[in-house]
Length: 455
Figure (spheres, one colour):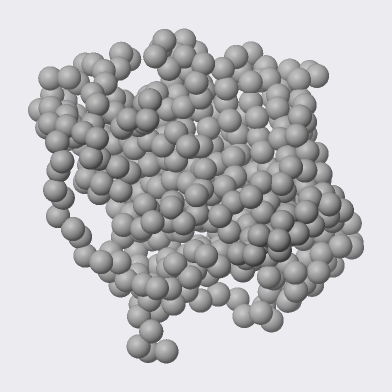
């Protein structure tokens, strides 16, 4: 694939591009660690869970066929990156992929959790048309073979001048976001987790709860620019298909696939809220940095991920260059570690990603037993939450997040999940509050769109 680029008009920003480009089939967005890009008009779009495979025709329209699930998800070749993008881990054409927690967990166990919908469990689009920042300027990139196509010519024309797009209906919720569990339900689940921990089933179990509402009008897409500004999420993103939308404000990198088969993962485990008072905020940060409990929880997940990576890594290449670093985000401080490794030459990066999902930071340790207990206690499928959204370039480089702080919609049903790792040292009140700390800003933001007349 040979890419051609066209500079967008300087009046275009993230919000206006989001509004304009979203009218195109297969539209998605990834913040990609401060290297944001939009992708559209995929060569193909595979929808798992609904058995659909959309293929782009010569006129850039689409036909839908049944998904052949006997074929590989995607083909990652080992081509050399183009010189324009050499040695950079950012999107330069390839596959944007979403895998739900349920899709990933079903590789390892049969789930009893009840799903209330038939939303996609995975989306995989192959893209050769995208808009991304290049030297601080938004540019349209596309396969040179598409240069003379009418749709691409119109896209070029519209992106080189200010374009007015009709405003869609406003976003509104039928009622404020409500916890699916009462506090007593969380108490019961917490106590059962403690019983499993004391029985020796696990060292740590990630217990989460769901917050729900109904959308009366509008789409999550309309909230993307404002939520990115609110959360400052380095690994946020958006992907959708028909009545399914996923809008992520994730701060967590799962796996980054670098050149020369290098990989790194940065698990988050340990949280305290930010505070408007700078002295109190710094005190919280220092408290997290020296917390033996949070360090112990973080180390459990580091050990789990080191083990996960070692299966696919060259002997002796698994390293932990950063341990227990405090990173401050818009609403919370997090304790973050980093693990690096080098993949064996024969390992396909996609194979490694799928086997490593779901991430250990949102399951527990040992992973399989923790997932079984999660399935038993949480009582509903997690869906997109704790899955992964990211991309693979054609050369095998790429970056995937962990889908925490993420909104998912199917039909009119809207959900956000939040939770934390439970150990024998965990305190119920602190763990319950941690759930709220993680999503309170998102809940407050959404509730401003809620109809409160019936309350």
